[in-house]
Length: 124
Image (cartoon, rainbow, N blue to C red; front, side, top):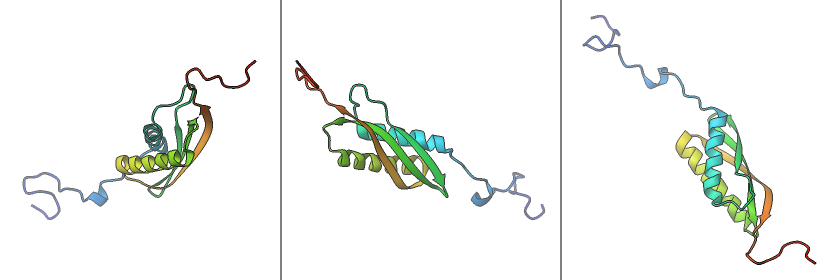
């Protein structure tokens, strides 16, 4: 048997990890994971609210994420956005293995939480 031909039983030698190729995860896949993580962090949506969506730019194994969402009002907007950032960073890191140095959260709209029997707006 000549050197470098493979295992003694005739199988080809194992290729070292660096020579096996690379895995590339599309930006839109990371965006779907980020949007789902944002949905988990926001919890139940107010009536009429759109579901959170995300945009992602991947550069050198780091995902820069933008999340767009709608919240109920009144709410602690800062705390809710912090929770979205934390959840998106954790989930993208765990599922995709990318660093997430930036999660920009944009609150698109606030929905007035309606209490039963309370009129909102102008009444006569």
